[in-house]
Image 1 (cartoon, helix red, strand yellow):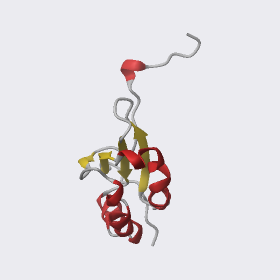
Image 2: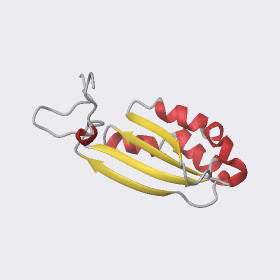
Image 3: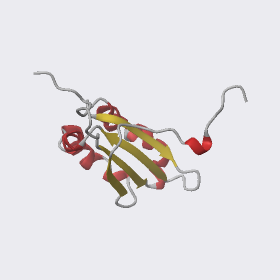
Length: 124
């Protein structure tokens, strides 16, 4: 039996979109990408992971924002039940100044859409 990561014709895909803010201890802020590297690489290797990207705040060097997305609810569930997620629950919090804040949504999308208001036109 073959399965597809795409919804049947006429159905709408529902991806899980998550944005989380991590406030890291000042002494660990510069090393956070290395501290989180094993977890980041393991999540990116998950078959249902669409993206898992860290950004550092321009205003607060101790704040990192994680933007992640999963193919569907099942992929999101697999993520939080994975061994690397359970390990990260033990290894990452000692480097944090507070509990991360999160926005978690199910969206009828399959990925990024273009931001038409900022369209880049070829040739100027």
